[in-house]
Image 1 (cartoon, rainbow, N blue to C red):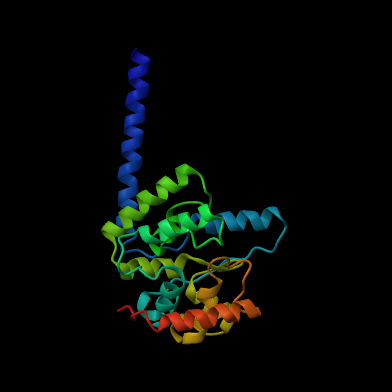
Image 2: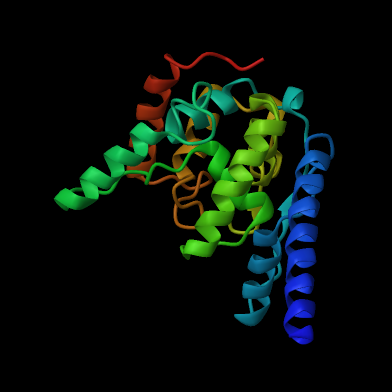
Amino acid sequence: MNIFRKITRFLRWTITLLFVSSILVVVAYRFLPVYVTPLMFIRCYQQVKSGEHLSWHHHWVSFDDMSIYMPVAVIASEDQRFLEHHGFDYKAIQQAAESNLKGGKRLRGGSTISQQTAKNVFLWPGRSWLRKGLEAYFTFLIEMTWSKKRIMEVYLNSIEMGNGIYGVDAVAREHFNTSAKDLSRSQCALIAATLPNPRRYSSAYPSSYMLKRQRQIQAQMKHVPVME
């Protein structure tokens, strides 16, 4: 019985420590730049394991040092209700579920920019119930402690935008020979068009499909307000 109590006490303190530390990290990232993410390390490991050249391009820039069109483009492409919901777009989730049940073409899966930010910054890729549960937990935390502008700032600095390319400034320099601030409206739309699968679709060498997606996103951008 003594051992059982010790184990119970140890587990209780471990869970409490993890809970408190997760909140402290989220609060800290409300103010601090996010220079590294789990995915960046995972990609480096995959590159080394497969014998590829190690590639890691990432430059943190503030929201005000990004093109005003970049947030507009990703909202139009990835999460059109980003400014309205509180982390979870239940309508998009329902639509995705209904489409999957009917066997139709799959939608984005209902994942919001807030959810993608939580996954990119705090977690690892995967579809397990544990990871999805932690994603929901961190999504709730960042929505409660960060502003929408901060969520977008971290998202656009941490998201994968090509092989070994993370964040808008890195992709601007690697693919367009410019800075995040000077990206044009059409370039932002093209970058946003790659985000469902940035390792398959390249904004540097866009296919006809990518150019079609770019035009569709530009049309949707007319209905998205500029974030300030």
